[in-house]
Length: 316
Ligand code: RIB
Ligand code: CA
Image (cartoon, rainbow, N blue to C red; front, side, top):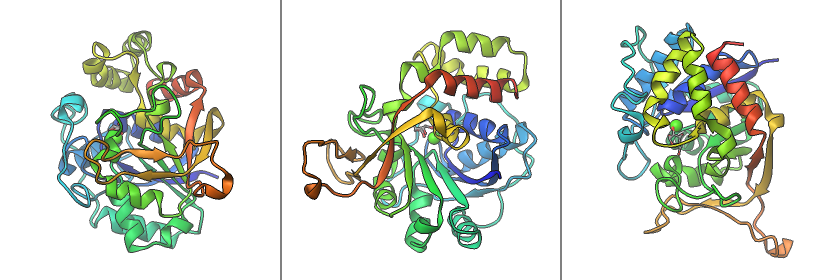
């Protein structure tokens, strides 16, 4: 039975690679892609989702545009990381398809309420504005979803578990901390992939991987090689944040989790957007708040990268 997923994204280079991975994974049935303002403005994240689907011949999958920015506050985009077009300035043509009619939040609500309970997972790899709005409008979604798989946060569970937007906050959460607070406190079954694991040295694209991708001679390999060229001289390995969260829906057995209580700082001067995991093991159980999330703390990094390259670059 294929897993039904809704991909909620802000493409973005790593979101774009996660779309390719999802389209190349027979384990998944992609019900639709919902887009949100994040790495680049909503018009571009939406266009990039359409472009990536068209690139792999999956343009039958609907794309719904969603929230332009955070529930409260201004959107701060990241063109300096993802390029002016949001996917590495690779000059892909304009998509031939338009976004589907209707708002992303309404699509999420309709799909989840109409399908059987526990049939759908949302894989959210951008700010959580769409997911939070759907939960506010229809709280029952939290119980009907099989899971919400999140790329986001920094939980201090490993040496890499600290911020990239600030010393304590990760970009997706920091872009819309109120949305993240709503999601973590919704009662949904959450699987969160923070920088704790996505920044691990064995879970990114190394220079050797990059050169292998460049030699593969495949259409998708050439595209990814172009997308990553801006990073490969900046950071090694290049983290694959969003593909890692998506990979959990394909190969869950390579990931390890801790059940923790997490809440989100929405107004700290220095810590706004921090995902505060309660790591106090010494605290008596009776004093602890109940765990509300499965936080990924370990993975087989080689198995993840091998899966990613074989599916996306070689189409195996
Ligand atoms: O912090 C990394 C996350 O922020 C990734 O999802 C990347 O695409 C950006 O959205
Ligand atoms: Ca993203």
